[in-house]
Amino acid sequence: YSYTLVREIETRLGRAASPRYALALTVDTSEEGLAIDSEDNTTRYNLVGKVEFALRNLSSGQIEVSGNVENFTGYSATGSTVATLAAERDAQKRLMVMLADQLVTRLYAADLTP
Image (cartoon, rainbow, N blue to C red; front, side, top):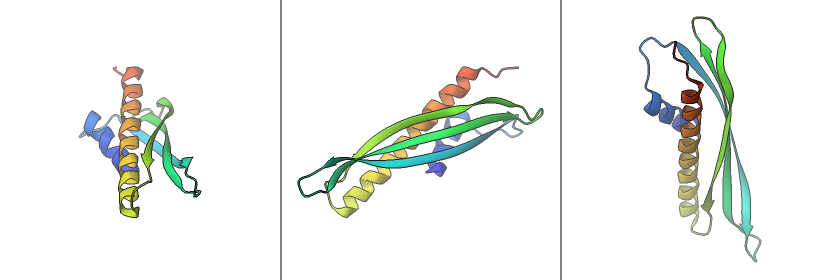
C-alpha cells in the first residue's frame, strides 16, 4: 500500500533535486466486515486507513509539521474470488489516493514558505 501512497504524494509535490524537508510516514490499514448474508458470508468490507506523518527540516532537524490523516473506502465481496480480489486491490488504491490528497492538503495548509 505504501508504494501507492508515496507515488501519489510525489505526483502532487514532485521530487526535489536538493530537498529541504524529509517526510516520514507510517501507514496502517485494517479491514472491517460490514454486511453478512443469511449463509454467514461477509459480502461487503470497509478498508480503513491511517497515515501518521512528520515533516522534518533537514537543515535544522526540527519537525515542522506532524499529525495523521484517516479515511475509509468499501468494496463488495459478492462476486467470484478473482472479482473480490480485484475489488479489494482497487479499494486499497482508492484509499491511498484519498490519504495522499488529505496529507498533501495538510502540508500545503502548514505554509512552510521561508
